[in-house]
Image (cartoon, rainbow, N blue to C red; front, top):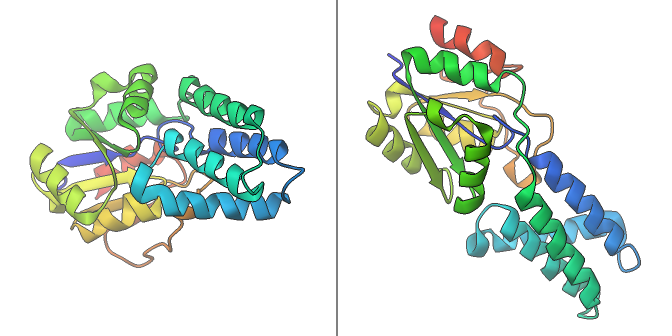
Length: 229
């Protein structure tokens, strides 16, 4: 019996990774005289991986990782003007208007008629609150959880607190690593809705054949999937 449906936010309900890619291209151009693009991308990804435990997920950590990478690849000779541009790029990301993905509102509205619907997202608290407020979807959710990371124990706690347990819950999202696999490990359903652009640190193999795994081409198929489980 399914009673509760959790939705991821970034790249499930609204655009996110595309803005990171645009900023990364800008970062690459700023440091073109100091490093080849592929080498710079590898160094930045290494910094992001290294800093997750310190800064968490989100734009602020990404900005700090860009600054750290710029210092490293220039051997601490990066001009202050470049640091200023990196910081400006980070602020622009934090101020970027929300761009809802197709069928996001309709899917949440349809599921909210018959189930408890939750927003479960990770990242910077202030930024995620801003995006939710601008999305216009806030009033549709029965609960909102902004967490530092998504693990099986986190899902178990959330679905116990807001619903009837993880075994009667579903998590819908674009990340196999964060949305699908830990939700299934917690005992729930995991529904993968690919976005098309996936951050390297969110890559994971799909649990093909698992009885509680489903994949949809878009959120438009979610109401029928829920109805036919």
